[in-house]
Length: 193
Image 1 (cartoon, rainbow, N blue to C red):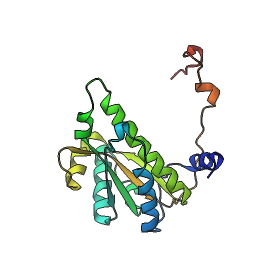
Image 2 (tube, helix red, strand yellow):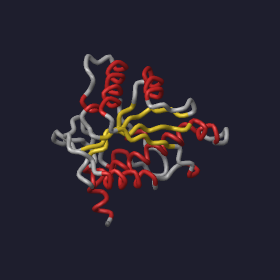
Image 3 (cartoon, rainbow, N blue to C red):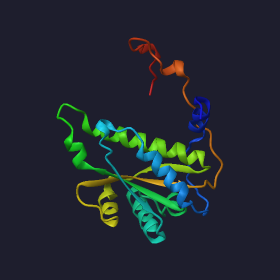
Image 4 (spheres, rainbow, N blue to C red):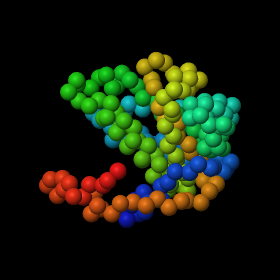
């Protein structure tokens, strides 16, 4: 694969909220997980623990908790319709193992982001979407209890994997010149937010 093909896949990667009931083949899931396995991580500590969820009752309960935490009137389809959810667990002991002078939480979350990106691009290459869903902090403990994870594992994210049941929406990007600075930050280029 050349760089142009890789960039094309990155452009095709997107976040869906509605999924078809079409199942994810086990071989395709393994390819996506393999892509996550080879993600870079700070100090090569690989802080992730992934829980693949296919059980419908478990998905429904996660969706109910998410709706409760977000103050929604009903559980969102993005958690009930995909054939696969993947809970992303972070081993807190890894965060604590970095030297005190390191921004350990940042390093670990950057590592998780890298893993999700690898998996997302691989899903796109297979015609699927891997969407990222951060859990409201008020329900995180309940999700962790539901998934029977020990106290040193936190589960801040639930990924949704499947074939999209909606059209891809546009996702504009800033031009490179808008965020590129040479040698020093050019304050005139900073955005008003």
